[in-house]
Length: 260
Image (cartoon, rainbow, N blue to C red; front, side):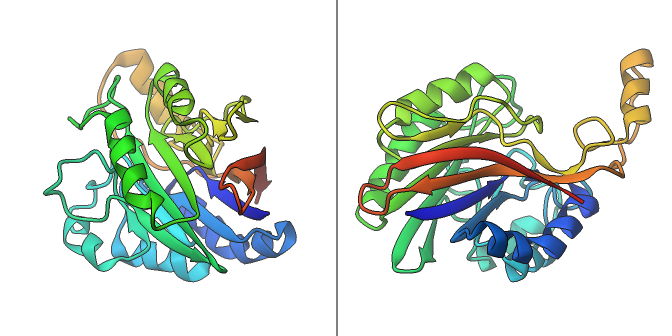
Protein backbone atom coordinates (compact mmCIF):
# COMPACT_ATOMS: atom_id res chain seq x y z
CA UNK A 1 0.00 0.00 0.00
CA UNK A 2 0.94 3.63 -0.49
CA UNK A 3 -0.43 6.28 1.89
CA UNK A 4 -1.11 9.74 0.52
CA UNK A 5 -2.08 12.80 2.56
CA UNK A 6 -4.08 15.40 0.65
CA UNK A 7 -4.66 18.76 2.37
CA UNK A 8 -7.33 21.33 1.59
CA UNK A 9 -6.77 24.95 0.61
CA UNK A 10 -3.94 26.57 2.57
CA UNK A 11 -5.23 29.95 3.75
CA UNK A 12 -2.85 32.81 4.46
CA UNK A 13 0.06 33.04 6.86
CA UNK A 14 -1.71 31.10 9.66
CA UNK A 15 -2.34 28.08 7.44
CA UNK A 16 1.03 27.96 5.73
CA UNK A 17 2.99 28.60 8.96
CA UNK A 18 1.24 25.76 10.78
CA UNK A 19 1.77 23.46 7.81
CA UNK A 20 5.45 24.31 7.51
CA UNK A 21 5.98 23.83 11.25
CA UNK A 22 4.10 20.54 11.53
CA UNK A 23 4.19 18.62 8.25
CA UNK A 24 7.41 16.77 9.00
CA UNK A 25 6.01 15.41 12.27
CA UNK A 26 2.68 14.54 10.63
CA UNK A 27 4.43 12.64 7.86
CA UNK A 28 6.42 10.63 10.38
CA UNK A 29 3.51 9.93 12.74
CA UNK A 30 1.03 8.95 10.02
CA UNK A 31 3.70 7.22 7.91
CA UNK A 32 2.49 8.86 4.72
CA UNK A 33 4.53 8.46 1.56
CA UNK A 34 3.37 11.60 -0.25
CA UNK A 35 1.75 14.95 0.61
CA UNK A 36 -0.32 17.04 -1.79
CA UNK A 37 -1.94 20.36 -0.92
CA UNK A 38 -3.96 23.06 -2.63
CA UNK A 39 -1.97 26.30 -2.34
CA UNK A 40 -4.16 28.82 -4.15
CA UNK A 41 -4.96 30.87 -1.02
CA UNK A 42 -1.54 30.65 0.63
CA UNK A 43 -0.48 34.27 0.03
CA UNK A 44 -2.58 36.59 2.23
CA UNK A 45 -5.61 34.41 1.48
CA UNK A 46 -5.53 35.06 -2.28
CA UNK A 47 -3.11 33.38 -4.67
CA UNK A 48 0.42 32.14 -4.12
CA UNK A 49 3.96 33.29 -4.88
CA UNK A 50 7.03 31.41 -5.99
CA UNK A 51 8.68 32.06 -2.63
CA UNK A 52 5.77 30.59 -0.68
CA UNK A 53 5.50 27.59 -3.00
CA UNK A 54 9.20 26.86 -2.48
CA UNK A 55 8.83 27.15 1.31
CA UNK A 56 5.96 24.65 1.30
CA UNK A 57 7.84 22.16 -0.87
CA UNK A 58 10.99 22.51 1.22
CA UNK A 59 8.93 21.81 4.35
CA UNK A 60 7.64 18.49 2.97
CA UNK A 61 4.80 19.05 0.50
CA UNK A 62 5.47 16.97 -2.61
CA UNK A 63 2.94 18.57 -4.94
CA UNK A 64 0.87 21.76 -4.95
CA UNK A 65 -2.33 22.39 -6.88
CA UNK A 66 -4.14 25.65 -7.63
CA UNK A 67 -7.63 26.93 -8.41
CA UNK A 68 -9.56 30.01 -9.50
CA UNK A 69 -7.24 32.31 -7.51
CA UNK A 70 -4.13 31.11 -9.35
CA UNK A 71 -3.18 34.58 -10.62
CA UNK A 72 -4.25 36.80 -7.72
CA UNK A 73 -0.59 37.51 -6.97
CA UNK A 74 0.32 39.24 -10.22
CA UNK A 75 3.99 38.24 -10.27
CA UNK A 76 3.10 34.55 -10.12
CA UNK A 77 2.23 34.34 -13.81
CA UNK A 78 5.94 34.98 -14.45
CA UNK A 79 7.10 32.51 -11.78
CA UNK A 80 5.00 29.40 -12.29
CA UNK A 81 6.96 27.89 -15.18
CA UNK A 82 10.05 27.69 -12.97
CA UNK A 83 8.25 25.66 -10.28
CA UNK A 84 8.31 21.93 -10.99
CA UNK A 85 6.11 20.88 -8.05
CA UNK A 86 3.01 22.95 -8.80
CA UNK A 87 0.25 22.61 -11.38
CA UNK A 88 -2.54 25.00 -12.35
CA UNK A 89 -6.02 23.84 -13.41
CA UNK A 90 -5.76 21.68 -16.50
CA UNK A 91 -8.85 23.20 -18.11
CA UNK A 92 -7.40 26.70 -18.34
CA UNK A 93 -6.69 27.80 -21.91
CA UNK A 94 -3.71 25.87 -23.34
CA UNK A 95 -1.61 29.03 -23.77
CA UNK A 96 -1.80 29.81 -20.04
CA UNK A 97 1.59 29.29 -18.34
CA UNK A 98 2.26 26.47 -15.92
CA UNK A 99 1.91 22.69 -15.91
CA UNK A 100 -1.46 21.05 -16.42
CA UNK A 101 -0.45 18.03 -14.31
CA UNK A 102 2.36 16.68 -12.14
CA UNK A 103 4.22 13.39 -12.11
CA UNK A 104 5.68 12.80 -8.65
CA UNK A 105 8.33 10.22 -7.78
CA UNK A 106 7.14 8.39 -4.66
CA UNK A 107 9.64 5.65 -3.90
CA UNK A 108 9.61 3.42 -6.96
CA UNK A 109 6.18 4.68 -8.05
CA UNK A 110 5.08 7.49 -10.32
CA UNK A 111 2.04 9.40 -9.05
CA UNK A 112 0.14 11.65 -11.45
CA UNK A 113 -1.77 14.62 -10.07
CA UNK A 114 -4.07 17.10 -11.80
CA UNK A 115 -6.84 19.54 -10.97
CA UNK A 116 -9.75 20.98 -12.90
CA UNK A 117 -12.03 23.93 -12.21
CA UNK A 118 -15.76 23.45 -12.07
CA UNK A 119 -17.97 25.56 -14.32
CA UNK A 120 -21.04 26.11 -12.13
CA UNK A 121 -21.05 29.36 -10.09
CA UNK A 122 -17.34 29.89 -10.84
CA UNK A 123 -15.77 32.97 -12.40
CA UNK A 124 -13.11 31.78 -14.86
CA UNK A 125 -14.18 30.61 -18.31
CA UNK A 126 -12.68 27.15 -18.66
CA UNK A 127 -13.00 24.03 -20.78
CA UNK A 128 -15.22 21.12 -19.74
CA UNK A 129 -13.70 19.53 -16.60
CA UNK A 130 -14.95 16.07 -17.58
CA UNK A 131 -13.42 16.09 -21.07
CA UNK A 132 -10.27 17.68 -19.70
CA UNK A 133 -9.99 14.82 -17.20
CA UNK A 134 -10.28 12.34 -20.08
CA UNK A 135 -7.40 14.08 -21.84
CA UNK A 136 -5.11 14.23 -18.80
CA UNK A 137 -5.83 10.62 -17.76
CA UNK A 138 -4.96 9.45 -21.27
CA UNK A 139 -1.80 11.54 -21.09
CA UNK A 140 -0.76 10.14 -17.69
CA UNK A 141 -1.83 6.52 -18.08
CA UNK A 142 1.33 5.29 -19.75
CA UNK A 143 3.63 7.31 -17.50
CA UNK A 144 2.25 6.74 -13.99
CA UNK A 145 1.23 3.99 -11.58
CA UNK A 146 -1.40 6.04 -9.71
CA UNK A 147 -3.48 9.06 -10.73
CA UNK A 148 -5.11 11.54 -8.34
CA UNK A 149 -7.70 14.07 -9.53
CA UNK A 150 -8.87 17.26 -7.84
CA UNK A 151 -11.99 19.22 -8.73
CA UNK A 152 -11.93 22.81 -7.50
CA UNK A 153 -15.59 23.72 -7.66
CA UNK A 154 -18.50 25.47 -5.95
CA UNK A 155 -21.34 23.08 -6.78
CA UNK A 156 -21.41 19.86 -4.76
CA UNK A 157 -23.45 18.21 -7.52
CA UNK A 158 -20.69 18.89 -10.05
CA UNK A 159 -18.09 17.41 -7.71
CA UNK A 160 -20.11 14.27 -7.03
CA UNK A 161 -20.82 13.78 -10.74
CA UNK A 162 -17.09 14.14 -11.43
CA UNK A 163 -16.33 11.47 -8.82
CA UNK A 164 -18.75 9.00 -10.41
CA UNK A 165 -17.40 9.83 -13.86
CA UNK A 166 -13.86 8.90 -12.84
CA UNK A 167 -14.69 5.92 -10.59
CA UNK A 168 -12.34 3.08 -11.39
CA UNK A 169 -10.12 5.26 -13.58
CA UNK A 170 -8.15 7.10 -10.87
CA UNK A 171 -7.06 6.33 -7.33
CA UNK A 172 -8.82 9.32 -5.77
CA UNK A 173 -11.02 12.31 -6.54
CA UNK A 174 -11.01 15.09 -3.97
CA UNK A 175 -12.94 18.35 -3.99
CA UNK A 176 -11.64 21.74 -2.87
CA UNK A 177 -12.67 25.42 -2.96
CA UNK A 178 -15.54 25.68 -0.46
CA UNK A 179 -13.24 25.41 2.60
CA UNK A 180 -15.73 23.34 4.61
CA UNK A 181 -14.87 19.64 5.13
CA UNK A 182 -17.63 17.25 4.07
CA UNK A 183 -18.65 14.00 5.75
CA UNK A 184 -18.89 11.91 2.58
CA UNK A 185 -15.42 10.35 2.32
CA UNK A 186 -15.79 6.88 0.81
CA UNK A 187 -14.34 4.43 -1.68
CA UNK A 188 -16.69 4.27 -4.66
CA UNK A 189 -17.72 0.85 -6.04
CA UNK A 190 -15.02 0.64 -8.73
CA UNK A 191 -12.20 1.65 -6.38
CA UNK A 192 -11.84 5.43 -6.46
CA UNK A 193 -11.59 7.23 -3.10
CA UNK A 194 -13.84 10.29 -3.03
CA UNK A 195 -14.63 13.33 -0.86
CA UNK A 196 -16.61 16.41 -1.91
CA UNK A 197 -14.43 18.87 -0.02
CA UNK A 198 -11.23 18.48 1.98
CA UNK A 199 -11.87 21.60 4.04
CA UNK A 200 -9.20 24.24 4.47
CA UNK A 201 -5.83 24.39 6.12
CA UNK A 202 -6.06 27.68 7.94
CA UNK A 203 -7.86 29.67 10.66
CA UNK A 204 -11.33 28.38 11.52
CA UNK A 205 -12.08 31.28 13.90
CA UNK A 206 -13.65 33.18 11.04
CA UNK A 207 -15.69 32.70 7.87
CA UNK A 208 -13.90 30.43 5.39
CA UNK A 209 -10.61 31.73 6.73
CA UNK A 210 -11.52 35.42 6.70
CA UNK A 211 -12.19 37.84 9.57
CA UNK A 212 -15.73 37.10 10.73
CA UNK A 213 -16.69 40.67 11.64
CA UNK A 214 -15.82 41.93 8.16
CA UNK A 215 -17.79 39.14 6.49
CA UNK A 216 -20.82 39.55 8.77
CA UNK A 217 -20.78 43.30 8.09
CA UNK A 218 -20.81 42.73 4.33
CA UNK A 219 -23.77 40.38 4.64
CA UNK A 220 -25.68 42.91 6.74
CA UNK A 221 -25.08 46.17 4.87
CA UNK A 222 -23.79 45.07 1.46
CA UNK A 223 -20.92 47.57 1.54
CA UNK A 224 -17.71 46.23 -0.09
CA UNK A 225 -14.76 45.96 2.29
CA UNK A 226 -11.51 44.11 2.76
CA UNK A 227 -11.71 40.61 4.21
CA UNK A 228 -8.48 40.16 6.20
CA UNK A 229 -7.32 36.63 6.92
CA UNK A 230 -8.68 35.45 10.27
CA UNK A 231 -6.57 34.44 13.27
CA UNK A 232 -7.04 31.58 15.71
CA UNK A 233 -8.15 27.94 15.76
CA UNK A 234 -5.73 27.04 13.00
CA UNK A 235 -6.16 23.54 11.59
CA UNK A 236 -4.89 21.41 8.74
CA UNK A 237 -7.75 19.53 7.12
CA UNK A 238 -7.64 16.76 4.54
CA UNK A 239 -7.72 13.03 3.94
CA UNK A 240 -5.33 10.11 4.11
CA UNK A 241 -5.88 7.73 1.22
CA UNK A 242 -4.44 4.22 1.06
CA UNK A 243 -3.94 3.00 -2.50
CA UNK A 244 -3.01 -0.44 -3.75
CA UNK A 245 0.24 -0.11 -5.69
CA UNK A 246 -0.58 -2.87 -8.16
CA UNK A 247 -4.04 -1.66 -9.18
CA UNK A 248 -3.67 2.07 -8.56
CA UNK A 249 -7.07 2.04 -6.84
CA UNK A 250 -8.04 2.94 -3.30
CA UNK A 251 -8.43 0.67 -0.32
CA UNK A 252 -9.46 3.33 2.21
CA UNK A 253 -9.99 7.04 2.74
CA UNK A 254 -10.26 8.83 6.07
CA UNK A 255 -10.80 12.49 6.86
CA UNK A 256 -8.17 13.93 9.21
CA UNK A 257 -7.46 17.27 10.82
CA UNK A 258 -4.72 18.62 13.05
CA UNK A 259 -5.22 21.60 15.36
CA UNK A 260 -2.46 24.04 16.25
